[in-house]
Amino acid sequence: MHPLAIITASALLVAAARGEDTFRSTAQRTHLLELFTSEGCSSCPPAEAWLSSLRTSPRLWKDFVPVAFHVDYWDGLGWPDRFASKSFTARQRTYAAAWGNGSIYTPAFVLDGREWRGRSLEAIPSAREAAGVLVATVGKDGTVSVTFDAKGAGPWTVHAAVLGFGVSSKIKAGENRGRQSTHDFVVLGSETAALTASSDGWRAKLTLPALRERGELGLAVWVAERGQTRPVQAVGGKL
Image (cartoon, rainbow, N blue to C red; front, top):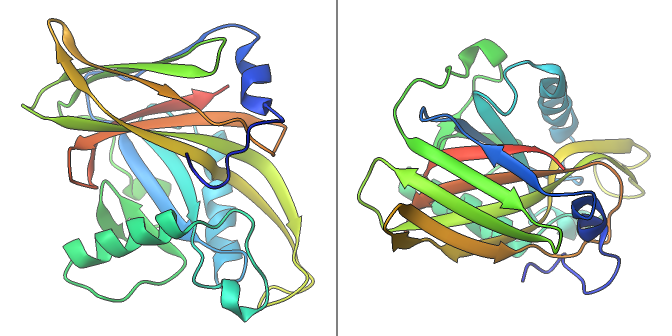
């Protein structure tokens, strides 16, 4: 279980108790847009503000699913980012290694597993490439049932992340000292599982963590080839 997850304060289960939520992609590839960021980085607030602006785009959840991973390598400057995780830093390092680049930085955008410097809504392609339908259903018990009608052979791994919106922090140290920082699409907790082949596609079930954060929540789910980081299909929405 992700280190941000705790056993009590089940905000996700409260959201799920309103009824099942089902998120379904089209057969075309929905792009996964990742931001690696930190509350300790003075260059990150403009990038996060741009990411937040995507909340009002009619293309959100259709053409792209955004997620913001907070990394921990800025924590040594005096402000420990409460959303940061070593596993998120490891994910960014895996990307950098795949690109043949040993250095990592923030803010860093990644689109479909590739370094991306566009920071423009127009630079995100429409969903056109055939990928297969990805469906994620959040049950009342907080479990997520996933099916994937894959276009490739696999095997596949599915990732599910609980996202927070309008989450705010008063930064008291580091490069952003004195700043009130607000985050959208911030990853609060995540789980990973192997998809199992069945007669009608690929299936998996994940149990999402209960969270310390309350308020507006969302879900992002994406699939990658097993052992790979680059996503092939994504789906998401508000809980």
